[in-house]
Image 1 (tube, one colour):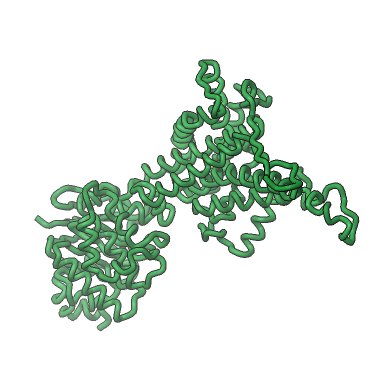
Image 2 (image 1 turned 180 degrees about the horizontal axis):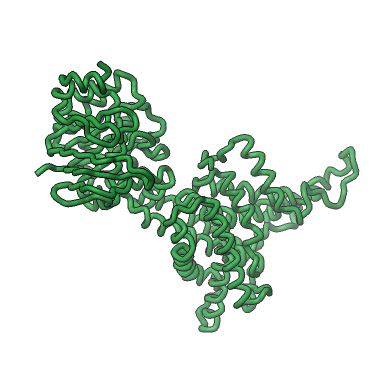
Length: 333
Length: 234
């Protein structure tokens, strides 16, 4: 039983947390691809930028004494950070992507431009914050939640941190809000229409420029949310989310590009796959070690932790072989 | 004053012009049909009206106002609607959501219009929760026309509504078009089934190499031996 709880803590909890971050990031990637038809490579850095905005706001809030003992300050300032990030995303579009779109730039050109934006954002962050590591929990404690399992002989407890619990709740709220927006509101439906058939959306009189703006607002604010969640779980540094932009793209592609629900499914699939792959199976097998035909090594994982990122690509290749346009049948190009 | 009046329109996609002086006039009660050989500029004429390509010379006026080179999001509220030939439904969205998208420019209650569309195409009411991509070709065409009617247009532009449909559906869709027209919507359509379409057209236009060749009522054009010989296959 203790071994199962170890498995729960290391795979289920970690998988849900990582999956939430990937899913929220991948929704933005997939929305931008669906509406604007290009791979927004700078999405990871929009996440990092959002996290730094939240960090600044959290410091300001702490200095002003706006804190509560219930919620970490990082979560308290998250809505404000999301709004600011949405404005910055609109600014980035206006400054870099809109002029290219106007000239009818190809998706490849847009992709290269977004790599440029990546460098700009990373440069700007390093300019102001240096290349050091920051933590949201310099003045406050990360609360650990331990749930004892009322079974005989069980000594381990189910463990997760309070930020982890909150980020899963935040993800659920964001996903539900997005679902209702896309299926119930006029503008949300127009977004789906434009992702489905941009020419017909224009012909129907849908204000495509408005839809593009809304897309950046949603993608920018969700990026800030995902970035802040990641920074609350690990530490804040200038290349925080740049390192996970590849699994996020893999999640969006696995789910089917342009499909929001696909991005959520893809995010959790890849999150769980990564935590399962680096899990030390020896712990689970130890009670039956005597019955095994081989000697149990100290660590028995599918891949070493350093190679975690490769898991995303294995999943990507396997899923695309089985369904070439992703689980939810996304755009093929 | 004609509802739609096109005078000597020249235009294209940037290179050599495809339209070299098209003239067209449609009244509110009309069903206008544009026929002609491939590459004559039939679909291009519709696209020029709808602001989808650049008009470099001539004028297009709708209800007396010049509208050439206006974009669709300005034209739809004015009372123009366009059904493209291909990819004319949102395949991943339900039939009802397709219709809603047609009403995007309206801020008033569009439910009566939706009811009117469902009465015109009863099969759409049955399938209203189904994704439009799962429907047959003829039903898709109805969704496309329904979507275009949701903005309560005064003039409906149809690009080859019978393309790819079986003969039985061609007749059905033509009947629907006459029904829409009887409800007070002027129609301007491009058709390959020229003889069939001209039979119910109150105005026919024969286009060739981007210019009007013949203009008249549908019956006149069918009766004209020269039109029949060159454009209707004898």
